[in-house]
Amino acid sequence: MPSYNKFKARSSSTSFGRSGGGQRSGGGSRGPKRRGQYIHPSRFVQAARLIDVEVYTPKHQFADFDVNDVIKNNLATNGYIIPTPIQDQAIPFALEGRDVIGIASTGTGKTAAFAIPMINRLAGNRNANAIIIAPTRELAQQIEDECRKLGKGTGLSAALLIGGTPMGPQLRDLKSKPQVIIGTPGRIKDHIERGTLQLSNFNTVVLDEVDRMLDMGFINDIRFILDMLKDERQSLFFSATLDGKVNELIQTFSNDPITISLKASETSENVEQDIIAYSSPREKMDRLHDLLLSEAVKKVIVFDETQRSVERLSNELIARGFIADAIHGGKSQGQRQRALNRFKKNEITILVATDVAARGIDVADITHVINYEVPQSYDDYIHRIGRAGRAGKTGFALTFVAGN
Image (cartoon, rainbow, N blue to C red; front, side, top):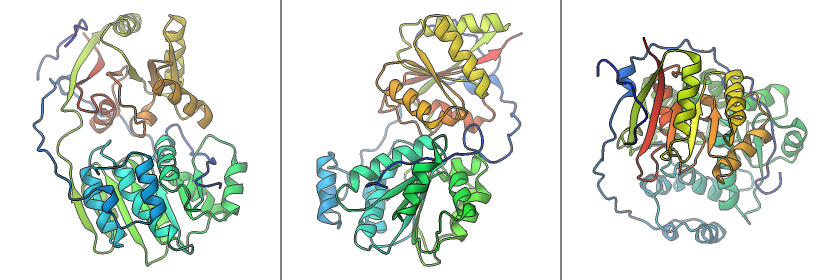
């Protein structure tokens, strides 16, 4: 591991078209801001471990799935040949109309696991409608992009209900009665209350990243939305974890579900974790500056606590000559998407973010996650550092901790 001058802890509407909407607070959460938990610095220190993963032999190829020819052609065109484990096991049950609970880590192909059977069901029945609920704007947009590729030529249309963009296009898309709604809980509820979205004829629902939505305080909004759907429906729930709170929600709104659990290990196990001590704000900034100049730091997300602090830190880094940008809930969706696209294309290599970016950002080549401020909870920490060390690579996570 490269040297970071470390301080060790003392103990161990067109076809799938886009539109906009808005969530009500920084990262999209309606719930009250949680008080930060005390997290002992030793929990931020852990060596990466090489995990022996049993080679999975799929039972199917995508060409084997009983979907219509248009979808099969889209799968082939987009390079879908061999399904991932969650796709291989979930898609056949979902195609049969079963309710499915899929437990799998981020980055395992869950979107296609629910999108393929959903699109196939809707393409064969113009009276069918589906709603997909995700915790963040970025994840909702990624789902919409995937659905658009897989549903090309099926004649299906969608409305994307997320924050930070003008309401006009969104309302226009809803007036065209799209078969698919993709969005975040707060904005979807807003439309139901406005009377611009009726869900009584929706017979397919997908909840993606269920655990994160509950963490963000969306439980009441989700219950409100699910109560609006048809009683006879197919429910597809995907989550990285299945604790009591998540399981209670799922069991309340599902019918004899099949559970597929492929959670093999923590996302942090292939991430080298350490802390950086500082004694003053000036020293903290200088240490971050030196760290970002390290040859080992190729592409990095720097997490700060608030919209204001993220903006301030991003501006300071730019003033120091770094190529950086910021992403947080106070920016418009266009600004957030431009920053994310620049990051994906390596036009910038430093993205400063609030926890809105902890999930829903799928960038495979992030080398480092830097917690400039200690996260609110250990779960938030795990979500943050899961952005690094993807695709079998070792990532690095460094957390700034005030020293004595």
